[in-house]
Amino acid sequence: MQMMTAVNTIFVEKGKGEQVTARFQRAKTVHTFEGFIRMEVLLKQDAEDQDEVKVCTTWEDEKYFQNWLNSRENAKSHESKAQSTEPSPILGNELTKFAVKVQHLPAEISEVK
Image 1 (cartoon, rainbow, N blue to C red):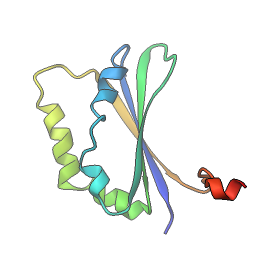
Image 2 (image 1 turned 180 degrees about the vertical axis):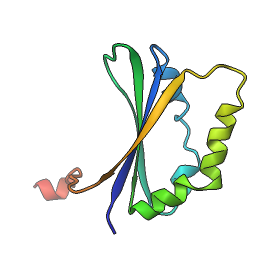
Image 3 (image 1 turned 90 degrees about the vertical axis):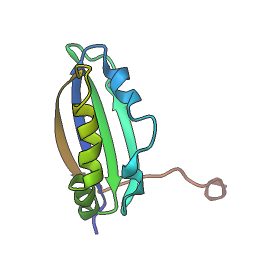
Image 4 (image 1 turned 120 degrees about the vertical axis):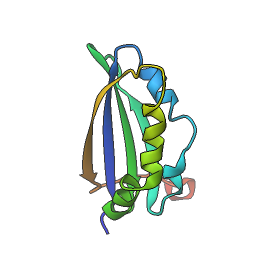
């Protein structure tokens, strides 16, 4: 197994990044999938032309990410946004995958002594 992180970069109309990140405040079904480790939603600071949101999910192995990506739950979560009567501030997106090669976690208090 090889831990991996998928980064979905979402390009958003300038000034609408907070609106898009707010959609991720509540955990959805992704956190219930086998192999899911964590999700982080990042908003680029000081973006000039457009806002940039990065949705980073880390998985025990790429096969678990692929299960999520091809799932009915994932498709359903994106369908509801497409059916909205309000125009979307999302201009586009790009998915990038990374193998996690090194990871440092906080030391336990007892390890520091």
